Image 1 (spheres, rainbow over the protein chains, first blue to last red):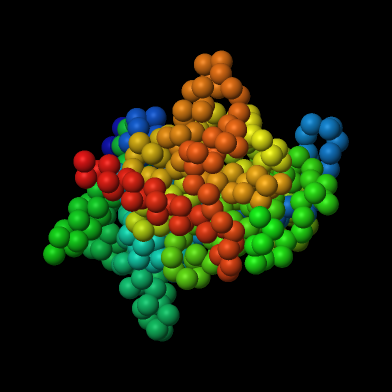
Image 2: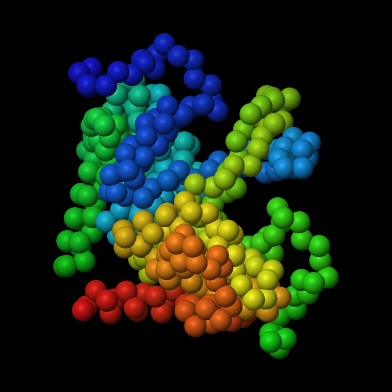
Length: 198
Length: 198
């Protein structure tokens, strides 16, 4: 588990505030997307953080300065783009627990959004990093919907690490593409093609 | 030209600052996207405006207040999403001229981005509203690239209204979907399918 060929600061040594939680994982994904873009493999970007702008000053004629603004809840997911002609849409979540991923980490409207993407022929999923285990999983929307149903019908409010190991696709950190999640997307695309051929 | 079944304030009567230019057209498109979403026709969103956040205060424990931030140039285009299984990507531009659309209204990196989308099998274009003519056009990336080449090689630095009328697809404002641009995208998809069948 500790033999990855890349150097990375151990998470334990750092204090991560609620607002920064997931930041480091996001950076790994952003870097991977840059690599995918530069190699002409895929065009996938993180959407800008939505901000509600209240007041704007113009101290210089050329430059607007925002002096009052607030973070907004995103309407959709953080990442989307195109790969092998497919519309790709996902969210990235960092999980500090070693045993389970709480369903409260993902908004219902994000699940609804990913479900819509799936219905329209796109590929929707979440990437979850269990940072203390150094394990990253891709969980496709179809399975996420099952876990969401279980949660909403009074069942377990989280997805256990065992369930991730069983249901989702493990992504091995690598180099130079740090989080090569499109290898896992290839598996989803193959599955989709097989289903369409049935 | 003035017989559209919808009421809309005449543009001439309003002062439009540079930063607000295009705002009204954007709102029409956002509204149309909402309609497309509610009718389960397509899932297309405007990306949030990218903002460089410099200072954040925490006056209350619960709410972060951004007190210094600046607008950033978007890395990509404003809109993307999925329609009929296709990845859709475009920018919306409002044009105050009645005779031509200046190439300086669109960034080179946005053109490069749309070109990449096309290469990866997506559908890339710009929507241009000539607001004083009450005409809206969809110009696909392949044609935009030709005009860009002309500009970069020392030719005309704008696209004339005649060229729009000849090369691009006219979108008629309508109701309840105000800018029914997906009708024009249908034409692009048909063309793409015919090209693939050749």
